[in-house]
Image (cartoon, rainbow, N blue to C red; front, side, top):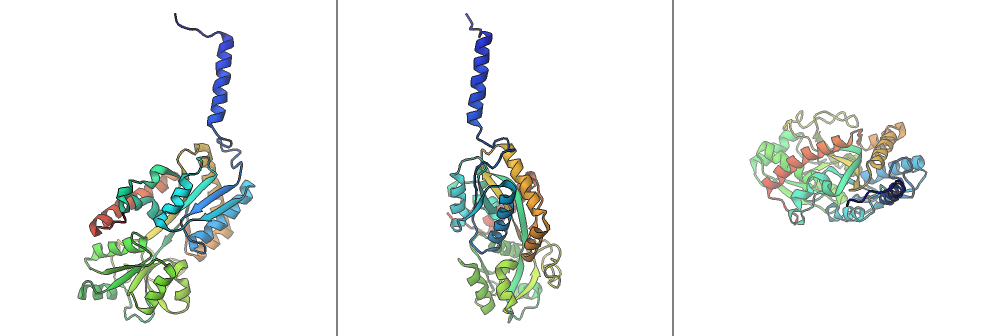
Length: 332
């Protein structure tokens, strides 16, 4: 005989269901009362770097909006895994976020195959921050006047032209691999652990050239020890309007070396909380003072939706997978 609950039992079951639902959904899960406690943003970037500087500005503005402290916790090193693991262990309630670049999202699965780790299976993007272009930098004493000269030297003596980067699998490394693929040249890669050491080496002629972001290389550039042959982008950038694009400087027009940075949350954060973080970050990025600060670094503030972050990450993943396979790059 089937059990039929009485009206009183139905009310009791409904009350229990609501109670269990309230336990399953943490405070602030609906977004309206988020955050209910201090927020921590882990970052894979070092203190004093461009991404760190603008993240602290955004964090300060969010703290004013949210009336809760927003702390930046720098966890550089380990290919991004130190910051990733710290954020991954946090409760999925939106109060712990992580700042990563597009290479952490798109290249790690191909660089570390034995780990069987996919960043976007462990985290959800919640808000975009910025995109940065990269310059082709040489010593101020270099005889090369444009990218055409660089490529001519590389073609004349395959394997004789060296380039530096800030690590295996970095945009500086993969961008150069892409340049090699587009032009058929062969060059020698010299990875560096310290970005500052890299641009000092370029300035001294220890390596012939490197890709460079403006904030990372501006000290050596302003000292007159570094020159930019081109910007690896479809169009010139307003911060350095006199610097031509790679295509204008005699290189392949298809070369577009950039990186974008975004905020992510561990999987499981309720959708309303993720939506609130996205909307509040975009409000901050629209502030004139914030945009001006980003502009000093040649960082382009982004107003992407989460779907656009995922789409751009997928495009880069396909490109990086092909480059990593071609160059047989592995960090396992």
